[in-house]
Length: 342
Image (cartoon, rainbow, N blue to C red; front, top):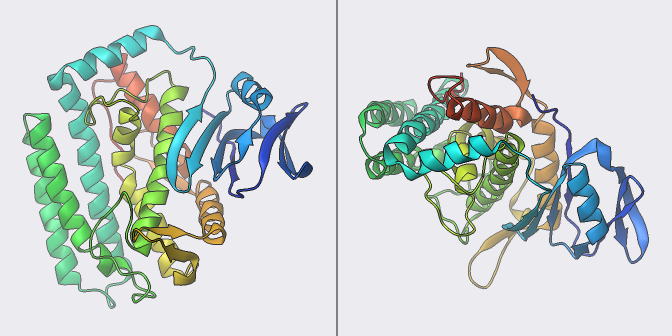
């Protein structure tokens, strides 16, 4: 089990990252703005960065601390140390990825987990806010998602699986706006859009999905898997296909619920977003800092893992799922167990 440590988020655009002994230092105009012992952090995530010293990168590689760079909300690059993972495990991963039949077995379970967790988000809202929601509309959506799961179980090809996954996502996002209970005029969701996001809700979703993808990639690295070789998402230069695979079942219970909580608890408002000339919507630095703070705090939430049958911090969930996938590829277990939120 990988110990969950802190992630250091750098949101200021005018700082430089360096190393001083065993401490990561954040400098602004040659003045030290922050100093953090490197053994206290697991990863560094930098937004709108000025740069990082080669000495820091080298030290982070020694301590197995990853550094991820974003430009605004867009992932740019990730620095990790030498990979010492099990070569046999990776060769098995590559063989499975090359065979559609083997890939389908894994991908099908991941998408079953995704659709189940979408149903969970809807059912949880129906239970908690029955008097404020159109429960009949939500119940119909939940039934359609349940029906999709039966189709997914019987699908025979990856293309067929992608079709059912797309249909389920359409059903889910058609009722997503109903789950927004506060500041409806500021947070209107009329459908999923990205590259770029065109409204406040999609800006939040895209940002949290980026964070989750980065954590899933780190989780894959940590157990010796290649985050660029997936099963549902096929090979594409520069795309972390396995990280995207792992993220699918975690989108709804981790990222979507996080976004809904921020909005419904009125922790953010429309003043924290701005529209660019190309109609893209981005968060202000202040809002991004708040979102990152809440995201980091949320990792400490204790959840019951249905397969392990023990409580784990939410932040460990990507690592647990990556570990279970590695165990399946090693034939330690007879199937990949997706995360089913209960």
